[in-house]
Length: 511
Ligand SMILES: Cc1cc2nc3c(=O)[nH]c(=O)nc-3n(C[C@H](O)[C@H](O)[C@H](O)COP(=O)(O)OP(=O)(O)OC[C@H]3O[C@@H](n4cnc5c(N)ncnc54)[C@H](O)[C@@H]3O)c2cc1C
Image (tube, rainbow, N blue to C red; front, side, top):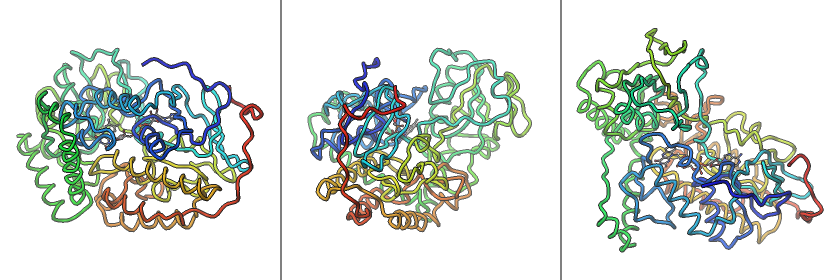
């Protein structure tokens, strides 16, 4: 989709500005609409919606949560091609949802939020974008958490002469057919990429710092008849989603350290490895030395066979340096490659958007989060009035669909905004509520494999050692926790001053 002419000329005044048009931003827009709010816009820096599913176009990209759970409850999709939809299907789905909800006119594409300041005098957010300014009563940050590629700090990487790119910025102009390709990383993206590359490239060298726990993926393509039946039977579609939801919730036990469930899941993963990889030395190199669930558990039926084939060499250690086209591993081995793919994940604990947002007393969100993200309800933050963060602090899941969490958060946003409308004033989180919520999370997380499992994972903030990305419970538990939020998390505040009109209040510093 091409970039639309942007109607944000100088200053736009809205009740709610949503930043980001992935699942979270679109989910927030749907929730506001359903709550009867029409005065909002969605600012998106890219030229189209989709977030993760617009940016990740690598070979084999697909969801690893069943498609019928990985979508909005309000927009069931009988047309998914299979159990795990391809990335391009998910992107089209989000485009379709935008159309079905009539949100096209709310989108401001190519409008990156460059800064957002809380105007204490008028009690509004002032937001600078690439194409104009916005004044909003409330700001919803839906900027994602697996959005900014993490580029490893490897000496000599810049000397690599061939195609070199991150998995989330796949360079489709680089034809890797018949080349020797290095892949750095063995996480969720790599297990999808490597089997595809192994078929097309002359050879794949997989540099693996630490292996993942991998369980069978299963799943199948839906036949046309199955899709037609689901389309004709919304009750069946709903039942399917409910079943998948229950399966997901049941999976939580094995991921969170329940001894019996983790033992069963570990045995399943080891049996999967043993069935698919004959060579004991290779099996040993692919066997994690940390607890099941500590890192995201991956689903794949074709990764191990690819790694065990002649098409792939596994380098079971970190990448230490690059010298021209030579990869030098930490074990001293050297590997010649023509192209290099960094499947090295994302900068997840320290989000760039936090650098852009300044709250009460001139405090930057990144400074408030200097010891790792904190919040109340995983959504609101002390010192940042009328601000909501979706899919940010403690809102990820290791066992089920992120969209479920996003929907709960979006419903909470709509609910507390309703409360604000009734009571007037500004939603200021009581720091004690944030402190208590952060403590609750820490207490629940303390004995889980995410904290004690002996791995380095992206759920934990490296600065404080706190679990800051993952919600350490089931989706049911998150819903119940948010239901207990009765408004007492907000401080009573003064009545806001009238906001100057758009004509009389041009903002400085914005084109
Ligand atoms: C390869 C991959 C596979 C995944 N598979 C699954 C899966 O199977 N199941 C699952 O539950 N989760 C999965 N995830 C996690 C996935 O990120 C979430 O499920 C979900 O898509 C996140 O949606 P989001 O809207 O929060 O973030 P995003 O999709 O990242 O969207 C954020 C949007 O904000 C925009 N933005 C950021 N900063 C600014 C700014 N300053 N101004 C304007 N716009 C801005 C970005 O351009 C982007 O469009 C996967 C992630 C990846 C990377």
